[in-house]
Image (cartoon, rainbow, N blue to C red; front, side, top):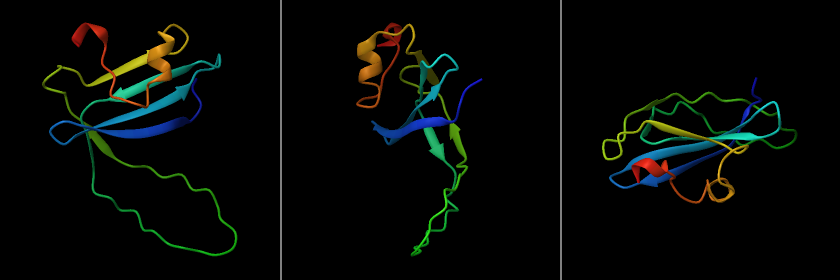
Length: 103
């Protein structure tokens, strides 16, 4: 089983595509690094409010669709930090990463 998702980040891809990058911790402490290549978020229904005083943590669900990246013929890619090249893991959130076979 995995714990909650952490480290969510988005990156712009050429031609207005959007990549969604995030990690999930494994039971053994290592992480799975995920990337979805062509993400389109559904309309935002979030309402922003400003309060003074105490704050409560809230969990939001954001709906999105993922489409195939036509240039690379990919939808997503997952790297396991237990077995992955440490350089890939260290730079995961700095650029859009593709598997070596399709670069």
